[in-house]
Image 1 (cartoon, rainbow, N blue to C red):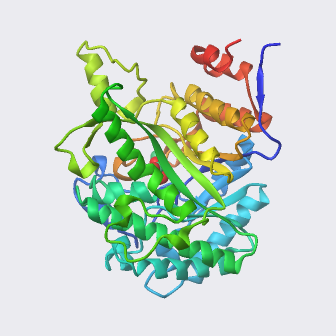
Image 2: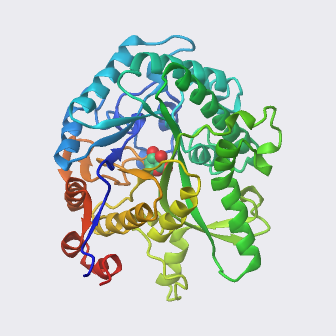
Image 3: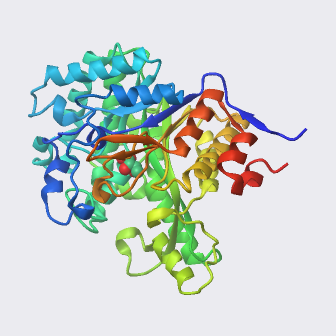
Length: 459
Ligand code: FCB
């Protein structure tokens, strides 16, 4: 019999993910609010502004989750609202978060709460942000206040979103505040402090909540040598993988610093061992890399932007890797990368959540197939007995996409930030069908992604 339906386990979590600054609106007390004021930092001079207005009203979007049949949502808390000045906590802000979490609970949506998603209170930024080791204690104190105030409404905690991306974009790429470029050493120090802060928050959460389930959202890229048989390209891909992907896993599962993280470390990583009750995987794309002696900041691997591959095609060169590039040149559409990374995480023997996965696609001509093709390896992983327990699509609606402003559209709902209007995209309808039926079906592929039907259901 040909396989026409891929069923997911009964309690599988189908969700969406958001972060405070990207959806709440009127966040004026964090470093991003200041960054947005600086000329040239954000595409088209955009600002988050009112964003999706969740601070005043998140009910409409929570209802949209229900309409799609979702049973989970990953939300983040804005540290700068909860602790607007150092050591001063704002009960009204905590009350607002209680209302949001209750709003989700009443709708049958299980919240996963992220404590830090890229934004810092200004008082922290002014004291060196995550470069300052004191942040570890400050983060633990903030975590304690949060779990005391919200612990009856949430037990699934994601301490920090993408420490590696934070460190790279803020200290190597320079596109996120504080906007330093090429400072590898400081970037590693920031990553180290974030991992230590995760460890401190892990202990705090468990001391205060016996049944807490604590993890972190780890952004992983699948690093590939640009020239597959080139030894040096192969080595740089391995180095980058070790520094970006593996060093986080090594610290939090085995309590060991990678080579780079060991330089300048004043604290041992031993206490971090076993501080993941689960791991979150944020997966977007594969990263090509090529050996280049001048690229010391990126461990001698030149990062090949997808635009370069696309240009090669435009100029009539063959794209030797046959990559499929997403709109906005955001990255290659590469579901195999997700499969390979899931195989790797499967060996950790802890529950795995896909805490983010998605692509910018305003006209929605790529997202339906993208969704089905990325859910297939998730399903396959479950068949291989990897403990994959949930998938959070990034994101519910288009939202403020950091330095890309409002230009990049990741939503299942199109969102006009001027009129605040939301419109369901076909991919949103598809995701709703998948969540409600708790399965991927041949019929969905026929209707939403006929071009990839045979890749999904070969027989
Ligand atoms: C991730 C971020 C998230 C969003 C998506 C597109 O790296 O965690 O906030 O920007 O990328």
